[in-house]
Length: 308
Image (cartoon, rainbow, N blue to C red):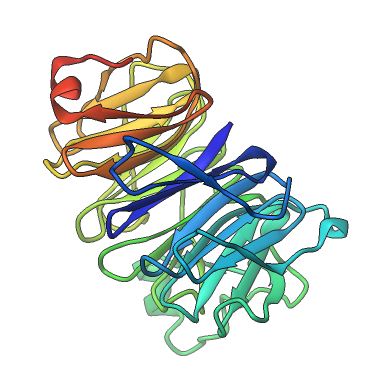
C-alpha cells in the first residue's frame, strides 16, 4: 500500500508501507526504490526543494534527505509514544510542522535537527459579532492551559494566500494565518472525520471526508456548502491538473472529476477497485497512488472517461 507522494522540479517521490520510498524522474513512467533503513509504514512526504525533503510515519518516525530522496537519515524516532505521524509540511528548509494521532503536533526551526513535541491547542473561531464584543477583552477566548484537542490530525495543507489548514477527526478543521504559530478551530457542519484539504484559488478550498462527504468553502472554512458526490466511500485526496480539472480520489477506486471548478463531479471508477491514497499532478496528466501501486493517467484518458 502506497500512501502519499509529491512532485517537485521533475521528480516524484512516493512513500508507503514497510518503509518503501519510490522515485520517478520521468513523470511516472519508470520507478526505482531507495533504501530508508526502516520497515515502519511511511504516511507523509514533503519537499521544500528538489533535494531537501522529509518523510513521516508510524513509530513516530521522521526521515530527512539532502539528495532528493536517494538516501535518508533518521532524525526522530519514538516507537514508545505509540502515536503514528500522518503528515508533514515545511515552509522552507528550516521551519516545519508534523501532525499525527491524538492531537500530536511537532515543530522544528532547524530543518529537523530538533523537534518541539506537543499537542495542537487551537483557539475557538469567533464570529464577527463576538470579535466586536471582545475587543476590550482579548483573553476572552483563551483555552485553559490543560485543555487541548486529542483528535487525530490527518492532513496539513498550505493555501496560495499563506494560510495553513489541518483536516482532523470528528469534524474538526483548523486554520492558521501566521505560519502555524496560532491555530483556530473552524466551525463545521459535519461530525465525521476530515481526511484531506484541497486549497484552490485564494481562500477557496475543498474538504474531504467519510462516506463521500465533500464540502466547499470560499472563505477558508468559515462557512461551507456540501457538494453532492456519486459515491459513499471515504475520500482520501484531491488535486488540480494543469488544465484546471479537479480530481478527488478515494476508497474502492473512486476517482471523481470536476471540470466546473468543483461545483459538480463525475465518477470515473477505477476498474481494479483498489483504494486511491494520493493524486499527484504531472505535466499533461495525473499519477494515481494507492493500493494498486502507482500508475499514470493522461488528460485525454480523463476527458474520455477512461480509468484503468
